Length: 264
Image (tube, rainbow, N blue to C red; front, side, top):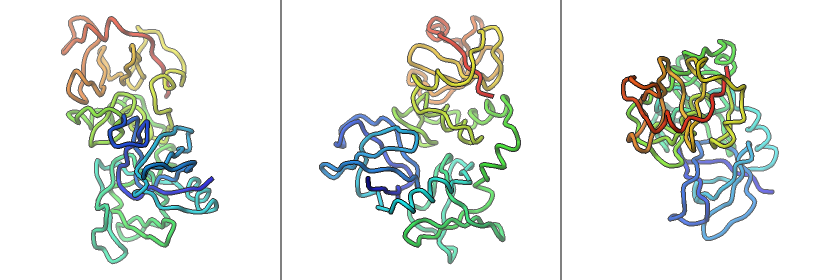
């Protein structure tokens, strides 16, 4: 099976090999994928978690199996700025010019305020150290539930985008997955799979950072009966209450509540 790496900062993953097809998710820059077929200028790819779909083949660079395995095991850092400029070894901005929050990279060294990344094909890029953090360092801080809720609130006002996983636009499960990845916690892409993670919590025991599920929707608890979520009806990432009398109470979510899962 061939292997490839994503060469643009955000690549749509589609249900079928056509531009008009449904966007089911997105891939970040430098993500390594398996490629199992090609059709009409699109490649059917499989992410490392098994998620599959079709992407525009123009934004893939083929790599060997050894490079794929090395890269997949080398993602040791994650972009934590909403967007991070990238530079060449000479310090000049280089295409695709910036990366989105949540992009995982294999940083090889850090020095003089820069983090260096070496990718297959001899490509080397630099990012300013303040825009990227080691994933192991994030884990060692033992992410707090309140920290997860605060992180989700960083994206208030970001528009809703079906299949979106970035600050350019989120869907509900994309927001949850990307925020938790900031803390080195890998969750499945879709709500139907996220609901199987962690342990179930009674509704009257919900705390910050818990994941709250509704009929075909999900959000992150942020205290006082409220959630931060990417809402199509709300126009994007916002805070709503699921408790009667709360600020911006959503009766539909209160009615459609299913369960809560605690990850941390």
